[in-house]
Amino acid sequence: MFKLKATLAAAAALCLFSSGSVFAEEKVEVLHWWTSGGEAAALNVLKKDLESQGVTWNDMPVAGGSGVQAMTVLRARVTAGNAPTAVQMLGFDILDWSGEGVLADLNKVAEEENWDAVIPDAIKRFAKPEGVWIAAPVNVHSTNWVWANKAIFDELNLKQPATWDELITSLDKIKAAGYIAMAHGGQAWQDGTVFDSVVLATGGPEFYQKAMNELDEAALGSDTMKTVFDRMAQLRGYVDDNFSGRDWNLATAMVINKEAGVQFMGDWAKGEFLSASKKPGEDFLCFRFPDSQGAVLFNSDQFVMFAVGEEQRPAQEKLAMSVMSPAFQQAFNKVKGSVMARTDVDASVLDACGQQGQVDLAEANKSNKLFGSMAHGHGAPSGIKSAVFDVVTAHFNGEYDSAAAVEELAAAVQAAK
Ligand code: BGC
Image (tube, rainbow, N blue to C red):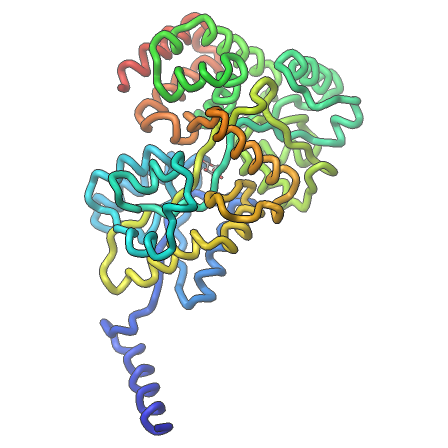
């Protein structure tokens, strides 16, 4: 018996070294845009998890917040017949790819692990279009947050602003004290992220849904939308002279380093504070964008699986199962700043901001105030998102006034439909 075992082990070892053997190396190539300090730390949790299962991780990072550049690289790779194993992707981009016949089918794993029971419909809509699971959702992010430097707030005796007027009063005081009031990076998607919050805060939840999800012409061309643009112009007065082109994580660093008072950004910003060893409630504050409390604009990072050869399937399935495992979702989201994609995972492992995020998400879902973020691929297809970004950025940079911006917005969305 012992001899037989030894012979089998030797044969297996030999196979490992011969190419094309059934014992082919298990590996995954993953395309993603998680390149900031906090993002890389979160990704590392996944890398380590797979490596502990004997799967080699080939990293394919494409820098650029919100993934616009990553999507361009992906298109080129697939056109060249060289798709990665898995790709980080957002909502409507997933739907675009689902029709192209190049994705893997995860139904077997999903059934075995009962994904249907634990992934909410708002996410399943993208992960399982037309009855086939094509992606594994790793988290839920939210964009309508404010990240503030606590020392500056304490020094100036500022309360967390709850309304737009209170926000403006706080920004004025921060500016008057010699700090940069609003840390911002002038990139289209960052302008779009601020716009997301201002639309929600100015028009309310129903208006956000009509304008940014249903693309309703009347809402897009309304007086309320003009007020939104007026407010964007007002915010423009609180950024520093060097904002143009700045990466989002460098803007977060300005809040971390007490150069700036606040940043309006999705909760991936929290990952930057944590990776700089800052603590919520002690070093920084997190609160909902004024006048948007109760509503949540969300986006979910998913790993979309591309069709790979049979020999790569086991590693691909291991990746999908890891992403969906409850323990992994806890470990990852703690670092990333997001909350769990699964509804059945204990959120008490998260810090105070994360716990608030998880509660807000559940409550917004119950009260029909949970909406897909336009700026982060969950409001409308990417052609429309780009059209919105073009107008928002041009207006933010003073190319046209608010009245013209409203007209441009309605026309651009109509043309992109
Ligand atoms: C993604 C986040 C990412 C952020 C900045 C968002 O679209 O969902 O995971 O951290 O972009 O790159």
